[in-house]
Image 1 (cartoon, one colour):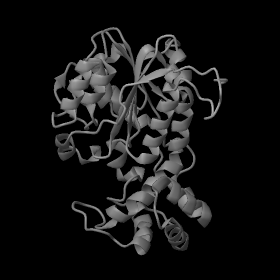
Image 2: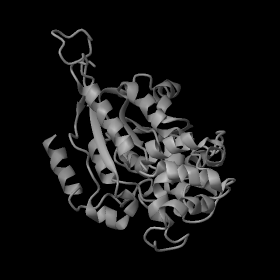
Image 3: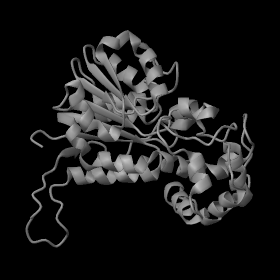
Length: 343
C-alpha cells in the first residue's frame, strides 16, 4: 500500500493522468476519461483478472484497465445503447477479452452470473458522471448549451423523459425535486416559473424559464445561450437525476455492492456532486464497520462483520493539470474499498 499511496499523491499533485497510446487505442482520443491514471493505479488490474466497468460509457477507463492487464477479461455495462456501440468500437482490438452488456449497474450482482462470474470480480469501477456523448449531443437534451428536445434519458428506450416531468408534475413535486437533487435555494420559485411557462419543448425554453427567476448569471463563453450556465445548472441536474432515478439506482447498488467483488477485489467509485459522494461515503463506512448496533448497546447483537477495508479515507481529487485540460473533471471525487478475505 505504501507504493500505491505515494504514487497516488503524485497523481493528485500535478502529474497528468494517462493519455498514452495503448494496445487498444489511444486513451483520451475519443473522449477524456476522468482520473484514469488514479483509477488504474488503485484498481490494480492484473494479468488474468476479472475487471468490470459498470458504467462503461465511451470506454476510456475500460481501455486503460484492459491495457494494464494482459490476459485480463473485462465486462462493460451501460444503460445507454449508443454509448455501448461507441465503446465496442474503441475496445475492438481487445474484443476477445471484452463482453459488453446493456444494463443497469444497480443490477450488477445479477449480471455477473450471466457472464460466468458468479463468484465476483477482481476490480469494479462506477463512474457516475454523464458521458461526453450525452452532454455534447443537443438531441439528447442534457445540456442547455444548444437548443434540443427535453429528453435527458440515459437509456432512450426508457419511458419517462424530461418533458414529461417539467410539463406534468405538480409544482410541489417539481420544487421538491429541484431542491433535493439540485440543492437549489429558490427551488419553489423556479418550479412555479416552469409551471407558468408550460408547455416547454426545448432545453432553451427551460433555461429561459429558470433565468426568469434567477437571472442570467455571468456570461459564458462559447456557443449556446449566453448566461444560462451558472443559474440553470442546478435545475438541469435535478431534472436529469429525476428522469434517470440516479440516486435510487445508486442506493440499490450500495446496499450490498461489496458482494460483487471477490475477496481482495477492489471497488472504485467516481462521484461528481455531494449527493452521490455522501451516499458512497456512508455506504463505505457501513461496509467497513465492525458493528451496526445503535450507540449505547452493551453488547453487539447485529452479527455484522466488516466487509471491506477503506483505502481512501478522504476522496481523491483530480490534479490541477487535469482540470486545466478537462474542466469537466473539476468536481470528481474518487473513493476506493477492498473486500476483506473471509467477508
